[in-house]
Image (cartoon, rainbow, N blue to C red; front, top):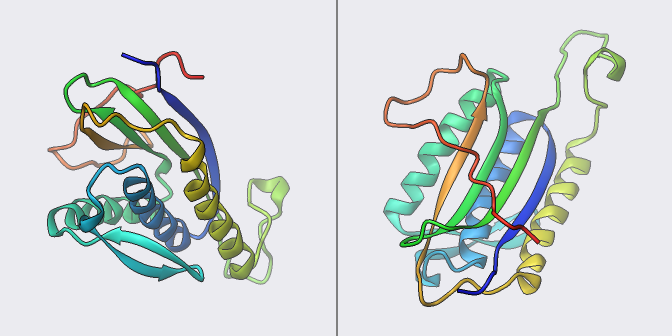
Length: 188
């Protein structure tokens, strides 16, 4: 078996919980489509950030992603979400082929007259337009990086998992399990 493993270093995201959740939704769909984890007929075109993005149209896949994003949204609102990782692995071998990590840094919102200064742990305030342009650039970067990545094997179908890193006291669904970090071995 050839070595075709890829370890994507973490992308650091900052912004409002709504903006980050929306970005994670579109990014998950983009990776699944671009990497061919599911057939193209499982997706439909959608417009976001002034670009066309493929999003899940298959009811089961769409629901699975939406269920996770609902929890992600809740945990971001409660400032409990630290990182989200999308892991691509072989169905039969279970070999981790790709690991897309997104570090989460929520933009603190202060409704009072005085904003939190960056020295006090707050994030520098940026406009929604700035954040949206950064997100647009990140999605384009992910899409364009596919041309440089090794092809996923046609001999073995792939699957994906979404790992969610939260505070240790966060309430998670009973059917969810603790997991190892699923690092790519011998990443190049």
